Length: 136
Image (tube, rainbow, N blue to C red; front, side, top):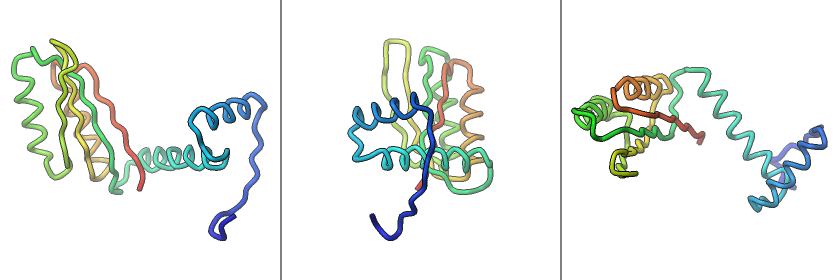
């Protein structure tokens, strides 16, 4: 074991241990410890995100919308231009004849990412907005 790792003990109900072992096998983790470290990274990221401070976060904002709604493309593009300092990349995908998905890669303060998501949610014709924020 590396010198920069601390050993801790974790007590779980049997059904959680069984489920953890199944995931370790299915996702091909090297060990339970690696799977738990991965889960804790998500836990820490969620904690930091929910603290709503001005810490710089990285992630995506996924927007699913009906592209037949008049003016929706212009509204989406206007918001993206107004918040260009936050958005590092945009991908547009046609899911069906009626539905498109845009994935916006973002880097910035949690408060700014939340503002972007809320502005996008407010557009008529937007069906869904999902924010995924990851840690460093």
